[in-house]
Image 1 (cartoon, one colour):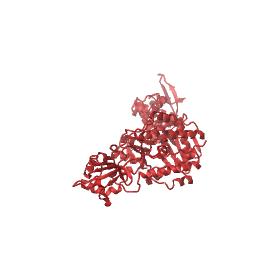
Image 2: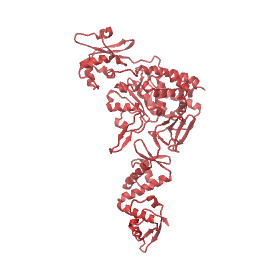
Image 3: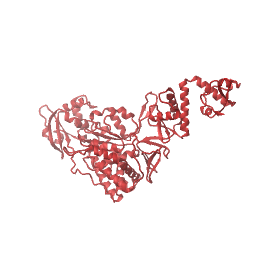
Length: 613
């Protein structure tokens, strides 16, 4: 007695026929390989030295005849490839593996705490193929085996959820999962009761979580409160104090919005885009880069096509660096709008027949000198202004970057403790009272409040509610004032404002007054002819312009009262006389007033939350 195997001599067919079973009772069809693999066969040796096997079971005869017919019908490579696929499936079942489908509709095997993409190009699959079948990916049999494995995966795919970067589950029992380095295939679970390691995939939410770059932080166990406070002091030194924000309190806004909120971004699906705006070399890019390093990414994205952005896997956090007006083509504007909305996005696969869903939107940061065009995008941005005085000493970047990398494990472990406090803080009546009357971003009130709760949680961890809450409340009120200064939610806006504000310096001028004071604000007055302004806006392809300069001039005068970040001035408006704009013969001019950027009166950051001994 011995187990049957696929290499049984084909002469067995004659032996089956000799058992005189009527053909109609032994119909040909697809063999049940699981049944055949478990079948016991009697082996005999004939006078010619050939080994034959036989069985008297009617079902065994039927299945083995099916196998012989199937083997003759299929090409040799196809038959052997399927046998290798069943060998891999057998190993997966013995190891209690599971199949998983990701956000790009690709299939994977979860085996012994590791994820194996079912793809001939991936090293993990090459290793698995070699270990189970002693086969390389270059053979025809390997291609057939992996394709068969994909088919089986589509049939057996589990309900496991595949996420990257982090995942949050809200409700009566809120919890956050973070990827960490683990030899045992574990991830970090943070809930109000504690912080523990749980199996990746085999947890209460059937969640498989990975870091997008394969670079999670190292969790060495729950740190003591002294260790947490020391690590948060490093966080403040390396990632808060290094932000060159015009309004010092906005350094903490950036720290919470970029350092902590991406980890809990599932708390709200409608999110604003953070716009780091400032002159060249004002620290806006390096400020974003610091948080990119903290989260384990190699660098900010300076040159990425829209197609690449649309097709990328879930990232969780993204910094789009140095984006100026020329970069904002309609396709890129559409991508940026996607960052702020919860709308699902679908894409056709290469074969044109399958639909795949795009990855969940990351928390988005844009750095820019010129800002963003188009009112629809401006209204989805919260602007953080960056400024460094000309000639002011710049901190050396490499020591800061090295320090962030060296301190990353400690800082991220401490931030996990802040997240634990946040899960309680966001439902605490006293914390809700602090943020109840603060609403500078009407469209994104949920996002703004979650950032506020993170700051309150940070203060409570470093000091406690008694001192931490007043500290947080003061900074939140300063956020409110700073953000409102750059926004006018619910107010109508002009589609011409941003193109004019960004391009006025390139228009042919009649004159320039600098400095110039307008309604108590100091800035620059650009005096231009409406026709010259219209011609330049045509040159830079500003959308929705009227067909003639006269029509543009009329619409511009009507829109002037809607301008928010600059001002359109006319000599005869409301009886005011502005000598610089007086008509000279046939020449008519308008004034475009651009307020100067505010220089922070006090360059030091706001007081840190006191840290108890």
